[in-house]
Image (cartoon, rainbow, N blue to C red; front, side):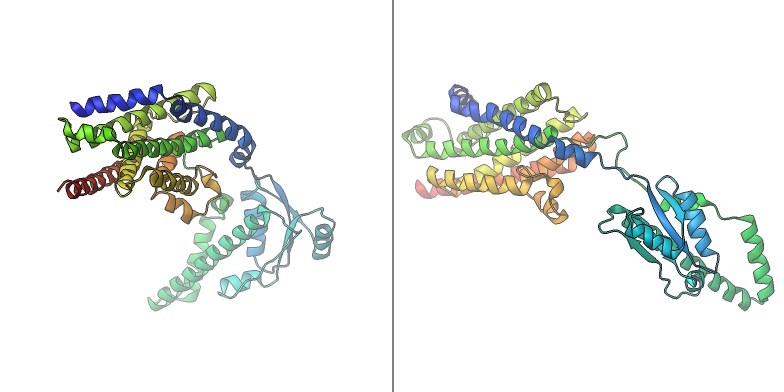
Length: 409
């Protein structure tokens, strides 16, 4: 149990150090308050994006039926909640676009139906004001999906007719059967409603707010700082006579590292608990409904961060050298992991790369928990963090053991 008393000694020294307590508790809460208040409007705007109903001007020159289906069944009926249709001639449409009475319109050519059914290129002219926003994207998406679905149906009809002719059926018989089938199944506008859909991962979940995001972001960043400070103190202790006195006592080298690691883990868990409870009380931060998931993710991240600190510290013998390297490394990891800038503005590859960092993986898991992720859903990420921490600690322990044997051989 000698390692236990060593951990208690480190914990007592930290509690007596006012500077350490300021870094552990006061600084994270202060930065969370500043950043949460400063970026509150940005997160609120991102969470409340809506698409207003807009007017679409349509000029239909099509001689076939598909232009009418596109205008009346698709845009007018199936998409009536998103789009308001206004039928115009071409000159009037151009005039209203120029005077900004309309922001977007389409012109359907006279060969629209023929080109689609025969597999040729069908061109629909889209006219809009500069920077129409998402309106042009919506209309373009609807046109593409409509033409593709109709073209597929036309191609399937051709294949069916070829097979019917090969089986001995006449063209008149095939057309009669096709006519009866079309009468039994009339065009249903509801079948086109999936052209514009809105999906959400969890309908009951709320978007993560500024205080929530920076509570997690600052929490993982200051936990990294706490770990580096603890490892720095361990290296500094090795440079002093205290370390040599401990080794000549009954305390073994393995017990020494175990006690240091245990003390560092306890201090980090206390800091994480203070941040989570403090932000919940002071800023009304919702960390999610899964308390077990929060505890698991916190413990896994502390283990991975402590293991990384011991691993890096095992290769550095001077405390000043480690302090400089740790300060630079912590800032780089915080920036890449999303603690300084929101992950939402990062490209997908950067978010994926951030998961390879202990703090980046922990932050993204906290955000998932805040979005009502369950305990089962965060187990894989927590297992990865815990496994990384154990591997880092094992490598660091072997490195220090080899170094010690070489020094005292």
